[in-house]
Length: 149
Image (tube, rainbow, N blue to C red):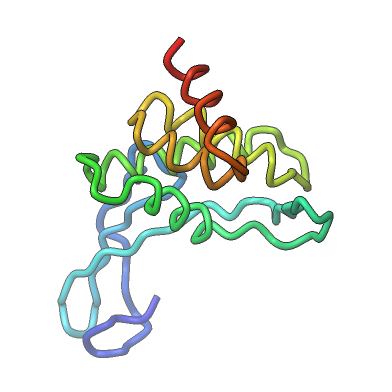
């Protein structure tokens, strides 16, 4: 690992510990040349996952798309960024726990909605309105009635 300060290759790990609720490891490193310390994070690499879209096109899973969709649904809601990150990690855990190489976007949407339902009702309705593509007010009201019961 190169030192970000002096760009030398001779660094060593001083401390190593798992990061809670994520599949990553935090390593505290020290450069033998300049003596400065820095932190690195190692993420566990998962199997590449292919998402089958509604039009049957296939594309590689993109965490950023998940984050953007959830953030749009939670816009101006009283939800901390820590809770959002934890929920996104939990959603990814559910997605990757199936250990399949392919998953439908419909299944991902259902997983997201189940997590949003527990987190914030307004965010859930916002996500559902886009995800389920409500054509008119009556279908929207039907979804609201299901949620309220």
